[in-house]
Image (cartoon, rainbow, N blue to C red):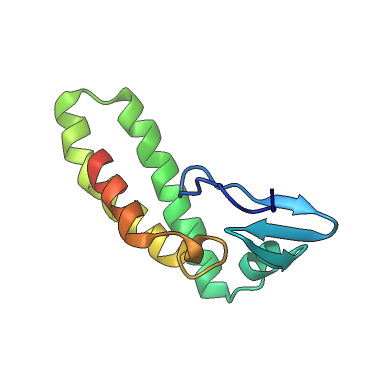
Length: 112
């Protein structure tokens, strides 16, 4: 069986097959380090956005864990907004840009 097939990839579970200095995703071969280089070689504003939204989501997740039902309902729209903003940044990078954005947004709608 060729590498990179039957990889049920989505935002929460991403599989990359690695073999002989190649990375395989969705039946495509990429050089080793391709995905890391793309995410690491970004401008300062993009990196700050990733840190900002990722940090905000982390703090919001902690608040949701301790929240009562009313507080949880009040916090959820902000969490969804921050997750959407983070996804907008991530979807510009491989391998995330290869995912089905509309399908991932449907999953987000189910959770938030």
